[in-house]
Image (cartoon, rainbow, N blue to C red; front, top):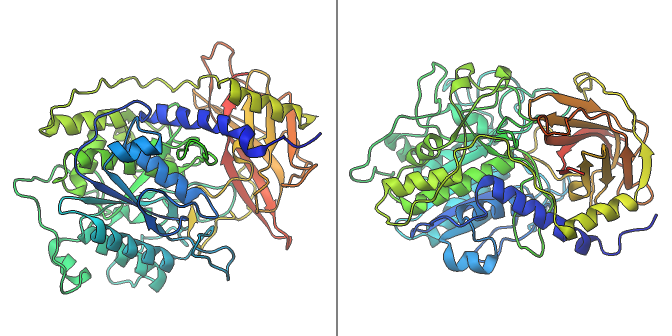
Length: 550
């Protein structure tokens, strides 16, 4: 077994297939009308501070991926960067919120995680960058595809004004209120539920602050400096019925933060949905990727991706209707969304949401914005279908990579029996408190793991750049269109790392229960691992992987 001739050259065709697959599912692959007003999307994440033509890649590509997904969705049909910048009025701002390489070492070029205080500083810088570059009508969307685990399942921090909020968390809360007072629309990932661990109920912070109301005009006088004026409502505007809960008594209102959940290709909550985290709005979250066609990063799955999709959709709506308030933009996105139901009520932030869940639909949101505005563009034809998204076959170049990886891997007969869901493991997630992490974190195998459904096999190839440690106790979870799940451990005794010969295996003979006529077909596949670092400390991680019908 030898290495592939050229790692990057071999996989770019496969990544382009993944990118087109994702943008087609979101509705951003074909052109849609874009407005004439500039909108800024600020992504506080792993990318270094920047704005302008090119989004910088940090050590982790998470921030770059989120920024490029948001931009591609805001400018549907304009994937190539040269076309995008000529025809699209979206400006992407990046501010570094996660600068830590280790607990002690940080880098201005980006890291893998951060602290709440560093996130707060990134939010303030995002507002400042927008103020420096924005014209009078420009609006700001703040994308927070990051979060930290709540340290208890009690009341949301800040909900009780008589109880002080710890200083690091209060720094973020104050920054969010400051941004809200500048009429920023703030979107945050609801978070992913990792294997094992504790304190997994409810959304991660800052998405948990969806239960707090945005500050009023009088309250904004407290958060703004003396020379700044609180926002005023545009002349003739009206406040539509609110859609998110600012208080525990069920009264609806304008939230400080809008928490975004994730959906799979059957328009159902992704497997990593945290119990008690799913609010009223979700978006496609499986295998999301975008960016430079010649350097497409690894596809990611999680509420990070969904949040970037909603950020791009909000920018597309706002570019047509710049005088709307953030709540009015969200109302358009919500009302134009696709109805969806969660059969798992324990996933919902409020059981009453069962009848009110919506999945974002970019085309329908843009159509509604055109209908409400004065633009004379031809209304796009939007498909109302709620059928599960069917995964097309990869092209010849992508197929060549699939074949090469399979041929150059160590082939192992998989264990032929299913196992119970992983509820007994209690390893802490490697994305643990008190640090702020992307959602999801960087995957161990990324593009080079894929499930071959018809042949009932899986290829697992660890990314040479993976820094996490040794991967063991691999478990594969496969979710189907009827929401049934197969859980299996193909080879429980095999340990993998980024170095040969332990970096590439094929497991054959998986006990999959799909039906060949596709009445029951795969909508999500996910690997879980135990991760052991160089110091012998064990944690857990998981990642969604692509699949092909071969």
